[in-house]
Amino acid sequence: MDPNIAILAGGVSSRMKKALADAADLDASLRRDAAEKPKAMIGVGGSGRPFIDHLLENVAAAGYRNVCIVVGERDGSIREYYENPENARRLPGLEIRYALQPIPAGRTKPLGTADAVHRALLASPAWKGRRLTVCNSDNIYSVKALRLLLEDGHPNAMIDYDRSALRFPAERIAAFAVIRKDTDGFLLDILEKPSADEIERAADARGRIGVSMNMFRFSYDPLLACVERVPMNPVRQEKELPEAVRMMLAEHPRSMFTIPLSEHVPDLTSPGDILRVKGELEPGSGNISLDPHSHT
Image 1 (cartoon, rainbow, N blue to C red):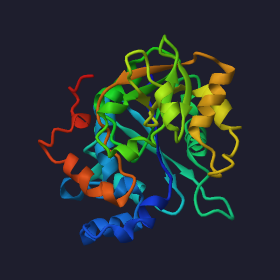
Image 2: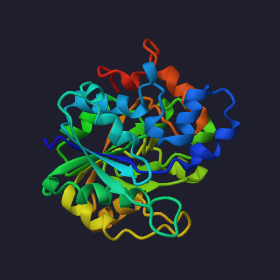
Image 3: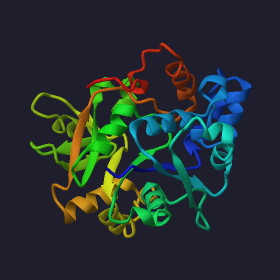
């Protein structure tokens, strides 16, 4: 096993900040965090612990050791937080390094998730010839999900989340990327912003619909070859990781296995998520995503 993981935290949280004016129910501390910090650093945990702290706790418990956090050039709060020995002690066994994702001249935000992964790979040359997990910083993936990827033997894999287990409003779930796979469980495509027809066609023989929550396991070298040359999305003007995955599949069919899992994933996208996630992190909340003993 290669206990390597890249966590993407270089975004500027534009959706969070734009919608903050409508979040009248947030206290001053949470409002300040949402306005001034990346989403991963919003203090939703007990005693104001940042969101990413809970993710890294699960990363350590799942058996990872080498962490590369991709951070933005305009905010040093993540690095500053984990350079404090008291905060680092909560994450025994983790070696954390950082990759900087810049904002190019003429833009207001970085170039997207594929660019973030590219930065992580270039900052981690020791991972060449090995495998790594890639995930967002604004989701708390369970110990089980993280461990499933770490222990999977396929060259590339992703978690195939059961759409019906996610506890979000229906209109939000309807916008999640759905997964098309063959009868052996190998990925065929990831459909972003799917239509109702595409969602229906993505159902398997049992009617189960899988969605991507951007949680992947890759072999370093083919991933690097794809993120180096992934094109800009013509609409969103970003280099997107799902497109890099499509490029990989075009060159290496049946190269990414999908691992089915049925559980909720705490997600911090908009101000409306802050209090809900805060409640999910409360002890005894019944949030299976934080339970290392949860089962599919």
